Length: 302
Image (cartoon, rainbow, N blue to C red; front, side, top):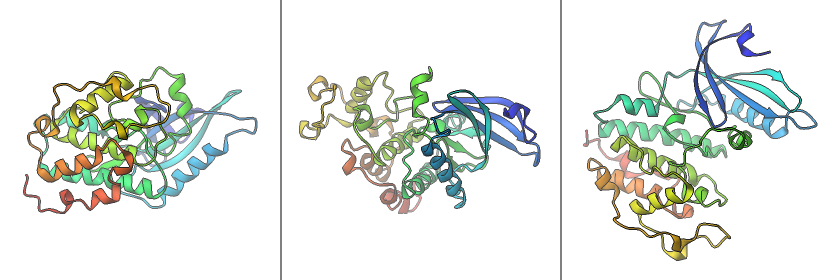
């Protein structure tokens, strides 16, 4: 069954293509509400749908029971066409009209300090919830953060990222490097701190209205990072056998974040720098970040 012929959902139009599948806007015929349908291809094993896929979907359903305000809701899972080696599935989510990238474009005059604090807190609230449920998002960027009509954040595109990793290699979709932590760029093992790095990049973007690090390859991305944050000492460079060497980077004409964002306040700068730490073990956690002075001080910077 394809959802275009479904008795439950009527496709309206395609609204995006991400690393893990195509997203359509559709209408729920029962309720009349708009929904977002994500079409994903699941590789089949000899026993059918792999257990890890079933576990991931079960986890997504379980997360729904918490009804977290900063997590997009999974409403339904539909099986589509089955081929010899793969199954088409449709994940039905609540529909949110815009993502943070579009929201930033629509605020060309910028955001107030109070707005940035509120958006940043909601992103961290959602990520802290995922991390407390042992989920690493791994692909946090403005396009995966949805913004409701009244300006609230909902995280999307998480949970199934691991299951559909294979698709990134099979499609021509370019997964952006701009929000990736150094340990990912270096091909190292990683955990929840990768999401904190991404949030640091996104908060800077809320101040500057443009991405912080716009690299074109893993090495170029690291060069862009070191130009702003400085090159880490050689003692902190991973000892594992990695292709990118510490001495291959020469950092010239360094530019600091407070020059990129002249409107940034002192506590926001301190929070961002604790997120954009090269060593993931020294990076602040989502819960620690929520208790940072930036969120506790009086909103004097309007």
